[in-house]
Amino acid sequence: MDVEVLVFQAAERLFAVRASGVVEVLRAATLAPFPDADPAVEGVLSLRGSLVPVISIPALLDTDAAPMQHCDHLIVVRMDKATLALRVERAIDLVVLHSDRQSNEDAGQPGNATAMREEWIELVGKTAHGIVYVLDVKRLLSEQGFARVLHLLRLHAASQEVST
View 1 (cartoon, rainbow, N blue to C red):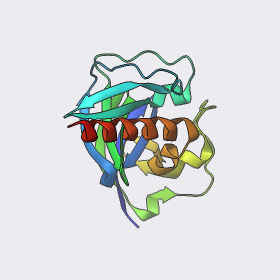
View 2: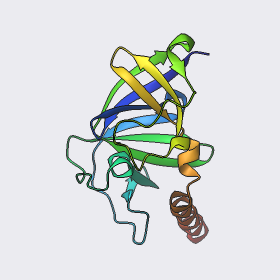
View 3: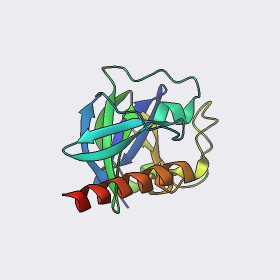
């Protein structure tokens, strides 16, 4: 089955997310800190009145990831009822991965991606930009550290609704 994905670069490698889950792509912005969060959670973005956690894809791949730069992109994704932003070096292109150019077989880890867990990779595809690893955002969100952040933000949002 053909799949439309948004290709992006992180830690000098190519990844993608399903386009159906992408809400928008933003330039880097100032983030509020999120104390005691997983190290890959860079902070929280205030987006049109909602608090959106920002997860650094480079930090997931490399513990020595550079801090956010003004030229980085934030890919805002929504899965089920959760919204988060993925901090990447740059969003590249929307492409269609044709079924004959993709695989969900074990294709191994992206080069030197010791922290990238295999279960986070939904499939691997070949594009004009090169080989891309399509991340399964739903599985990424289910990770204990990220699930905790999302839970705390939902509690905060609920308390804001009650107080208004």
